[in-house]
Image (cartoon, rainbow, N blue to C red; front, side):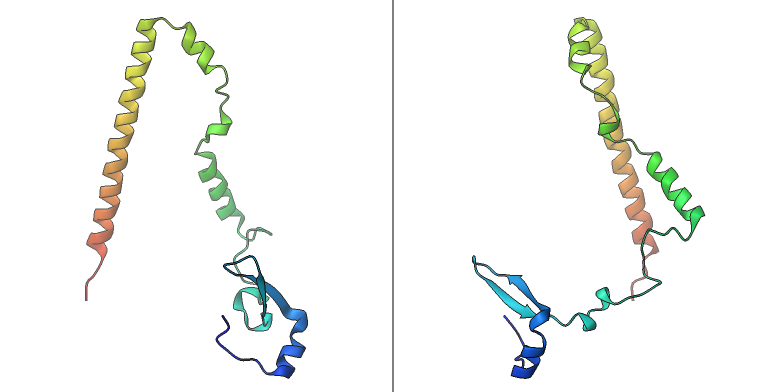
Length: 128
């Protein structure tokens, strides 16, 4: 719903700036948009963009930080099921216990990190 009423000449001038607005039904409503008043669309040479890279040392630090994380698509897990089937019961038991230990330990470490960060953050707040 439009909160302002546009004059007829303003409406005629802005016909080329009409963009559809998605409504709740199947029909769409055209709404006049004045892009010159939108700060996000204004040209700004100092706005935050990745390219071209302006600070190469910060970019290198970022790339090193990204490289320190692994993602699931970096590892081929397609042969794991066949490998698991080749293990005997004792080996499966051992591997299951080791994996469950690490899963539980990672959970404990993450809980401690959150409480540490939260504690440090809330202690640094100054209440008026």
